[in-house]
Image (cartoon, rainbow, N blue to C red):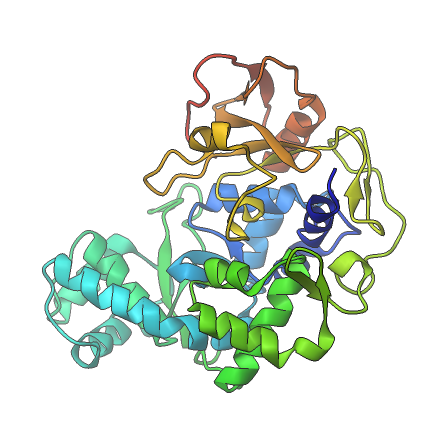
Length: 387
């Protein structure tokens, strides 16, 4: 395994370090992509031992993590204390996109006229499903249907007024559906940044590197959705705490393989692999296997996927249309895709090889709390729900 891949695996906690808990992992990674809540939950599984889906849902209900629009204007899990300064960096672009999409959905207005209606519809109501929010918007003189409702919520989020609540509980109306909630009601205070822009950019660069080193400013720009000049500013502001590496990448100075303080402990045997990943060295033992979920950060965290995903297999993973499929990771390289339909976990290797996923499949079963049986397909590279 290359040193670059080994360090990035460790930075991404894919070596499964000592238990951090759900909030600890979110803080470690800064943001966990959460446009698909099942895939997002599985991102915690693949980076931990012992966590369950219920642990993730509990963290959302207890507000120790919050689902909101974050990097690239995409839904992520973040820590409440990070939401303000992250929104201060990404909110303007999110607002522009939301206004454009609201207009495309046939709803006229500016932020000055639309935001008060969104606040009145949500304030004091607790989490509302899209349909419930639409009804309340219409009752307040802002008729909105379909995706216009979501874009209005995103406009509110861009101004620190809206976050997502927990999905509806099983057996309740709207079970499993996204909910939207007034940010101050849910978090106890409005979302506001205490950092100026330079301090926010410096914090962004520092936290990004902790989870992605070795990396370069262009990687941060691609991950965050911010202009390259902002990424370079963040880099410059923390230059005194960086080490430059061959190949034009950087890591945080004084950290074990760039992975953060306290990561130099002895490696543990990772659940579901049959082999440990070396924490201090940032390298993986031979044949270390991970079942990465759809939209995993290991494929989204840098400008390119060079060295991780061969060009010949790129369309099997990223066929277009915003889809990024679940993948089988072996020694830091994507070697196939997988899908979960009912109780059948189907692995589709890129080559005619046997990928040792039995222990990982058992851990998926443990995490979800239901039986999972692995199967192999050497034909069509993917079928199923994409998570």
